[in-house]
Image 1 (tube, rainbow, N blue to C red):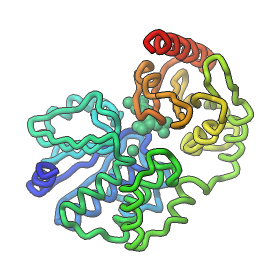
Image 2 (image 1 turned 30 degrees about the vertical axis):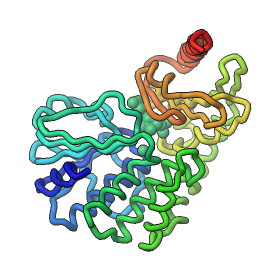
Image 3 (image 1 turned 135 degrees about the horizontal axis):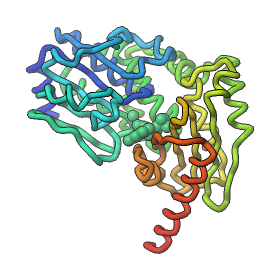
Length: 329
Ligand code: 5GP
Ligand code: MN
């Protein structure tokens, strides 16, 4: 961590990047770091290729997210909640990345590929519940004052990635960090409403449609549903309204894991995978097999094709993986 702090201290213009389709941890960590570094006199920008979903408008400092970034005038790039530039979804990123001399990566995903630059420092720890708890520890180590605004952003990150302190990644250090952050005055019910419980009627109707389609196969152990572009349009909803739906699909207790396929563009599908500790399934293996990645109990991927064929393809892959595991084990 010392080297990371040194790099931050020696930089003036800092760009914070995270993964596309940003979640509460990606946005919360980015804004908390941006707000804290601003108080140290740094120039800071955040950028997300897919823009910032409206649900994050309640977060202090959301204006740090620039609509366009030229990626050229920064002396430090910080990559949060992911470890490769390709996860940012920025087209042509490899070309602009050539100008990133100094790079810091803070991430809590299992270490697979890690980006490097002339002077890169990374802190990757898959045992951490969230990137936000890591940024909290970093700011404490730096001796930076944690304001109510910074606390709100960090608590949002911890709260989202632990599913409101319900997932198995909820550990003592996250609870302790959350307790310390609560002392600064953030409002947990406001975070909870914006992240999980506040929904529009079109969103709930869309969830209803997807939930009514759940299929649970004892063969694959998969509870699966899907949403098409047409469904979203018919409901008068937005794609971001689907955030959180996979957690409900994942409540099927006799499934080994759950899958939600979302058609976000013609023939382009995003998949979300979830499982639970007690179900004994590592969904990140399946996600990696499909070109994606993530955590053991929460992963994702993107694929091309139509929904029906994709479900068939994934089911076959699950059966093959099951077969392989049985043979190995
Ligand atoms: P979600 O289902 O909420 O989009 O993603 C769940 C988890 O999987 C997150 O930790 C996210 O970072 C990871 N993830 C989602 N989509 C992808 C992907 O396309 N590639 C990789 N490597 N990880 C993904
Ligand atoms: Mn995260």
